[in-house]
Image (tube, rainbow, N blue to C red; front, side):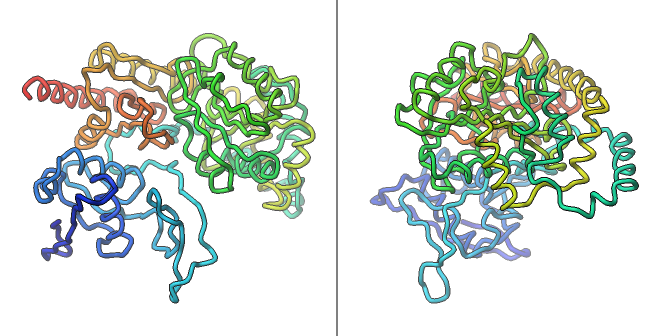
Length: 509
């Protein structure tokens, strides 16, 4: 394996062992990852082209590409359009000696200077919420990004100025760990008509975004449930968090009607995580029949359900189905909401609507872990909601995002004739399922990256997906909210050229 460092030629030896029980792809991944973690390959060092490495090692180019894709998705290498592939400038382990990710079958451990097991060894896998290509792609369809230019800067500045000027006493005091009462009232007033969720302020706990809410739930229910049941595919941060907290992950497939409720485990005391309104990342909506069956399952098995309504404020066609929490009459659903998508992720504001007994327990854990959220942001958000500013903002950005969705679908359809689009009725992203003759979605992702366009398959787009799930190879994800209509048209034009090239090569080959 050849590259350059500061202009000097360098060589790093890789070997393929035919008798190794690991696949060739896994051998390459483990060796390159090991060289990076041992600092033999440093940030910014180039890695060879897949074709050159496949010829050098005598393996198929596809084997090398799959190893590279895994290294890319886990943050060890990065692709720079029209330049090449390099060791990532920000590694997932951040130079720590503690091994946070282990290969299949490896024992998770961390060595100190004496070679002993380090007491800080832990089962942690970092999630990917920030695009690994941020600032590198001209047009990046990364899921979950909002358009910063839509933030109501003037109104927010006016509210903050008034709060700082006249709220000095409250700034100097500790507040209720459960959240400001006026913000919890504003949340209750919003989700009642918008999501069909009837809640009192005492049912609501304010958190630092969805991830903090999931952590709080994991702490609260760690002694109650052992299984963490989730959709396949699902939001990566949920799976990794609960797995790191000692829960046993149980993946349940998703089809066109949402999670397959008939395949939920019949064991008692499970914790089920679902995104029923706009499934993450496929975008399908859980049918009413399955919602009711899911609630029956929760009651029958004495289980709790986390309903993550991460982008439920965006609906473009038809009335949304009532949230699971709105249908729940037996106290089984914890409703998780966030302002990260509707306003700004940097505010770190979210909320949990919980059954009364759990709301008290969540409040106690919140007081132990952080003693509540900052007063200033909570107070400003409460004012923004209770003054009508939040609803005005939602109406405005719904129109903007709907237009961008329309442009995206309009420009994708001619290129992907026969493709199946999901998740178009709401949210901020959609999924596209390729017809069989289009080949592997991962190859389209790779070639689009070479043209400065970021499109993603579930495994590299912030989702967890089991290896045998067919959506691994036939699904592309497009987050459109942060891209202008002009940017979307340019990006889909380049994507059309990528697909045309693939089809021509398949016909020639």
